Image 1 (cartoon, rainbow, N blue to C red):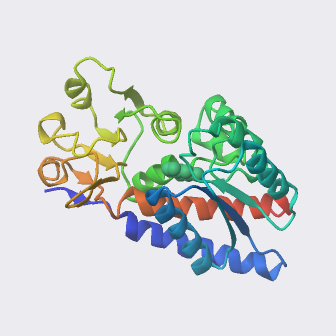
Image 2: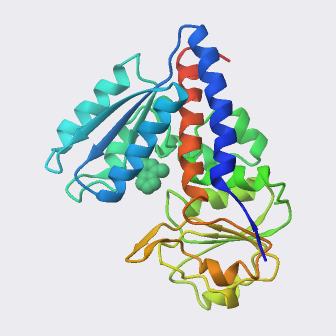
Image 3: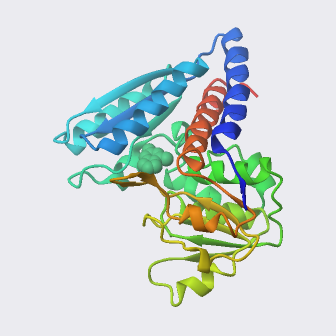
Length: 291
Ligand code: GUN
């Protein structure tokens, strides 16, 4: 029976660290501030933004929320981003994805100042991640790491899961999770395989994983027969079924085979929010030249 990797508990530790940093920054006259943008009425996005705003409040980070109609024009949204870029009181800017189809998400993300890009989605930050070879180089560059992939690395590190030399299989190739978590695991010296819906014989590829990251967006897609005995399983999926939330992994069956596994909810989700708080504090320091 697998050990449970509690993102809830580990994120609590990280948030306590962030809270102490926020208090120290306030003594220096700096209150970290995050601007959030939500366009339209996507129910899941509303929940995520609500959690982010609430967490800011708990940690003493100031947050300013901008709720825009789904009919907002690209120009109006770009004008808002520009205003936030120029506002010295705002350190981090987050535009919740997905955006309505009439808006070009790539263009909006590119408009956010790379110094305020606490999601790590700007091409400059993505490019930096691609160009660095080791975790040390990445950390020393002062760049923003995307929150979910960074949260996954923290889950592994803080449970003393060894990564070096391991086969890490990532199921899903999104820009938000699959690709960047692959790069981070490679920087941690794992041998990575990024597989996806077009992969031939996906089950046999998944079976090679010592560390398995499931981020394919299909409920209970990874079944016990696909998982190697003793694997560490990180489930990024958040799927809403009539009976409740479930991940991309068939948790009940896979927990009998894995060495360790994240639950859904209470696994990766809280880590994403914690790492956003880490990035917001980093942004406040960067923009105020505080080491
Ligand atoms: N949509 C799903 N995950 C994320 C995230 O981490 N950041 C933003 N901005 N949108 C998302």
